[in-house]
Image 1 (cartoon, helix red, strand yellow):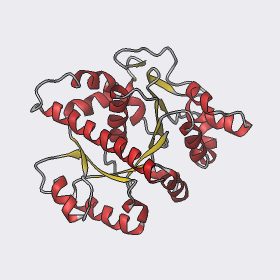
Image 2 (cartoon, rainbow, N blue to C red):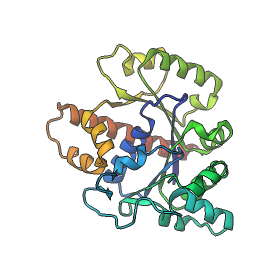
Image 3 (spheres, rainbow, N blue to C red):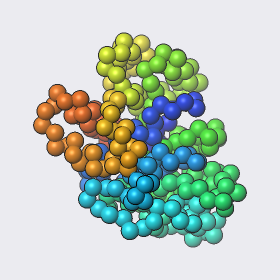
Length: 282
C-alpha cells in the first residue's frame, strides 16, 4: 500500500491533475490493484470531469456503468468528514463515498460543493491527511492530487508521509527556475522518493527531458507526459477510461497517440519500480 502524491508549486495549472489521472487510469487498467484518486481541491471539477459527462449526467468508464449519483448531499469528502467527526470512519467504509470507475480497480474521491461544505471547508482541510492515511489502509495505491490551497502545514504533512512524490512542472523557462528555487527550499524534493514529471511535454522544445536532466543535475530519468489532443478532449468529455482502453490496442508505435500512451506507461512503471525499490531500503 502506497501514497503517491502529485504536486507542483505555484498557482498556475501545470497539468498536475491530468497527470495523476493518466497514470492512475493506466495502472488501473494494466495492473490488478485497487486504487483511489483523492482530490484536495475545492470548487475544481477537473478530476470529476475526466470521468463524468455533465451534459448526460453519466459516469463514462467504457465497460462499467455506475448507478450512484455523481452529486448528492453527504457523499465524497464531506460525507467522510461527517463520519470522521463522529468517530465512525473505518478504512473499508471509504469506498461507500467514492465514485467507481473500474470495479475493484479504480475509484475517485472528490470534494463535492454543497452549502454545508462551504461552512466546513476549513475543518475538512485540516483532516485531509487523516482521510488519506485511512484510505491507505484499504487501497493498494492512493493517488493524491495535492492542491496548494490547503495551506503549507497540510502540504508539508502530506508530502512528508507520502511514499512517492511526483513533482510536476512544465517546459516554460520561468517554471523551471521556480522549480529550482523550490527544490532548494524543500530538501524533500531531492529525496529518492521524489520523481520528476514534465506535463504537456513537447519533444521539440529546447527544454527537453535530456537537457533538463543535465541542467538540474538529476541522476534519474525525468518522465514526461506529452501533450495529446485526444487526451485533453477526453478529459473534458468524461471519456478518459474509454480513450485508454482504445489506445492500449494501438499497433503503430510511431503514431503520436501511441507515443503518448507509451510515455504514460513509462511514468507509471517508474513509480511502481520506485515504490518497490524504497520498500527494500526500509
